[in-house]
Amino acid sequence: MIDLSSKDLEQLENKGISKEKVANQIETFKAGIPFVDLVKAAVVSNGILRFSDKEQEELVQYFEENRGHLDLLKFVPASGAASRMFKAMFNFLDAFDPKKETLSKYLDRTGDSDAKKFTDQMHKLPFYVLIMDRIKDNASNKSEEAYLFVKEMLGEDRLNYGFYPKGLLPFHSYDSGSATPFEEHLKEAALYAKTEGKAHLHFTVSPQHDEMFKDEESKVGPKISEATDTEFLISYSNQKPSTDTIAVDMENKPFKNGDGSILFRPGGHGALIENLNEQDADIIFIKNIDNVVVNKNLEKVANSKKMLAGVLRKVQAKAFDYARLLEEDKVSPEKSDEIKSFLEKELNVRMPKNYDDLDVNEQLSILKDKLNRPIRICGMVKNEGEPGGGPFWVKDAEGNISLQIIESAQIDLSDQEQEGILKNSTHFNPVDLVCGVRNHKGEKYDLLDFVDPKQGFITGKTQEGKELKALELPGLWNGAMAFWNTLFVEVPLITFNPVKTVNDLLKPTHQA
Image (cartoon, rainbow, N blue to C red; front, side, top):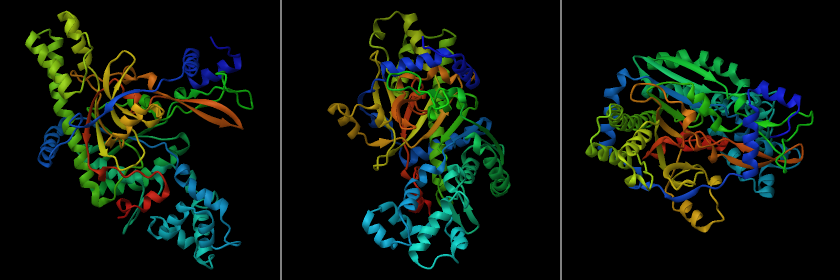
């Protein structure tokens, strides 16, 4: 066991982390996390479903006909701070001095392509008018204007956008004013997550932003409520301190801060499986806070979501019927084959190699186990060179093959064969999930039973100039859902509009 002082144990207790959990994490550092074993990329006709326009319309219709009696929820991971979004512009503020050189000289000298794009097109930003009003009397030329604009945008004593949560920044500019991602998510929810006039949303936010989100809700909620004839029921949660992971030094001993306390770090978005596990609904739509569209594209996005929900309901209806038969022990050998075929063909489940050699009871027990799992329908967009997890067939240590969303950090890129499989992937996952988390009796699964702890990441970091190793939990849509039943469905590119940097707001899809 690890050696912990009474002060260390007190720290663990305050965070709600057990000694065993810390010991397990340290063992993980020692053993390392093996790379995943890719079998092949999931492509259309082998792992990814593609529906014709007519089929999509039928699926949307199927969802519309069934949604009246369903509990629907939109779950939005929204704890991301905007600091990373403005990284290049913070650098520009540090590096450029308009008193010493012109903007064009600076751009020629440094080749700073981010600053060039930003300063060339900043008139397209949703906060352009706001900032120009605030600086217009202080700038005597273009170079000063660009510098003061960025300073006004990021200065701690000014707009301080770098401190904001991404979800509360102005993203889109309309005649009626600018809109934040929070507001855009409400508009979306009114279209596909509403039953009987009510839409339920849950946002996971950072504790320091709790009040800011509630302020935004009180400001824009009533306006969108009236415009969409929807009552919004909004709840919030924070990532739990108990999901933080221990950092270790290069000898795998707990890394200590200057004050002698153990360094714990947030476990990444995989920690949110605990927040998701506290929600309950027939269908849960999951989408990141920064992936929003302007009004003119709302209907296309909503239809894509309804289509995915239609896929879920159809496959669930069959799975539930089979689960009931198995429970009642009313399964003939023919029926058993039919259930196996459904699992393999419609839910991408792969049976153990020795399945045919097992006796009937063992086979039925496997069918029950494979059927009684949460189901996720994941939208996949064609790969346009954006970074993100991709869909693959993966083999685990026991030789079981399953469909998974895998990040490039989980792949051994020094292995030519594995790198080749990665290069052959045609689609990637834009965090567009529609989840069924209840069984055939309407009882909610415990989602923590379906996490693969071997799909985390170990990364190298530095703190106060010292090297350390950090552990990220299995990602929410990666290893945290590894043992769900999974379907991948191609969705249109318009459904994917993430804002990773401020310059992404200049893209046509974010121009109203």
